[in-house]
Length: 220
Image (cartoon, rainbow, N blue to C red; front, side, top):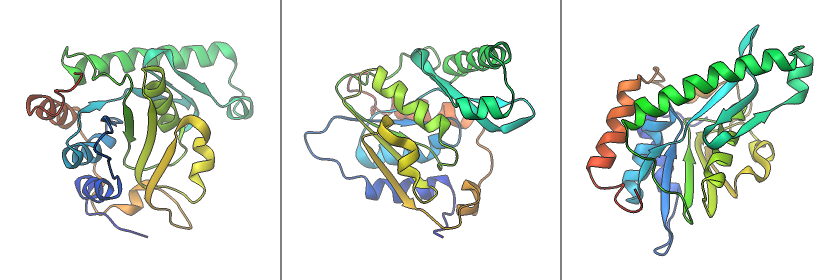
């Protein structure tokens, strides 16, 4: 298994894999919170705008780490009916979970963007970046958000993912890029020496720095 020092190290290595043609208009989108430090390095290396893409996992009440689905900006909603059935989650319970997560999504959007509009994705290649791919619910929802917001092409890029992860993504992304697909795959954090939680303030600082530094100038 490839070992990354931290998320910034993973982002620099991921950027080296993501070639960009001169005529390709790219925007880099990080999934908060852990994906943003990775995405910031990718955006800096590619000279591309950086933004967050807001999604929230819909966790099973008795097993919060198990995703029954995910929601995203622009009304994106993804539900795994098999998980919902197996966990005996009825429509009313699911609606309650979704309402709580939708409120949190909107709160984070306001906090992270600090009243700035999101970067335009219309006609662009959207590179959706996370610090790893496990179940994939939030990553797939993020790809759907980018598509709904007008991205011409969607690339899902992560430092580490389980073998065969592309099949889980399906048509939600046009291209999948992972630096390492170890077997066996147990958890994203195993690929990092430092996998500390990323505070909201760090996300805000990275997005603000990218905006103020001019990398969001095109179409922002």
